[in-house]
Length: 326
Image (cartoon, rainbow, N blue to C red; front, side):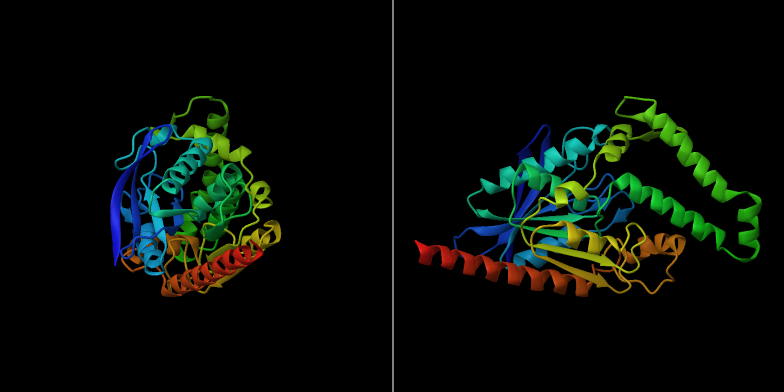
């Protein structure tokens, strides 16, 4: 059994959140703070047309293991105030930091035992939050060990490769229309427009673009704060994740200073579900809306549960050792 409580975090803008904790004895619980991936997502990891429910499901997983959790609507999303499109990377880090500090003061929370759980972009944000407030554990799901701008460049190169492998009439048409060249030109044009402006939001081909966020990600290199992480880390990526490089798991392990456990889950995508779809960017992305109807992967849950149990046992042993020294 667990209890959920609606709370409001007073950051630069008020952030609406849900605090979940096991229902039972009146005690303090270790805390898992959930940090979102990119896009206008709410506390449950849901965006318009893409109900991923990643954090909602993970809050149930960690509560069953005796952990409290807090998950929040991004700035300008759901019941949170502010403007999503004007939000930069600095703002995302500050918001996550504000959520950590808020939750640590709650009477149900053991402020000495805090874990950051980041999914996708959240895995970039979490190490920067750790620079502001040292945490006791970190779970990085579908993460990266390089600046997001580099990952996005890699994604585009993979898309172009994918486009060039299409066979039959469709492939002939793609080559006739020079789709690969158009993808490159569109990105180059957008980059020029972003760098030519200092506005937080620009219009590009009639659509709003969060320019501040894009520009700031060029400056943020997660490999630097990862080198300052001394707490235990769990990093997991799937073999069919076409958004990040699976090889970055080993980079994360080599960069962090603390104990780091890594797992590659066969056939798991960026949305933390398994698929039997062929390893092709277009096919996996097209299958995403279908895959989110399934719960997040059971093997992923098992890895997180196992790590949380080991983490908790380690904390108990440390506390006992400290008491013996006293």
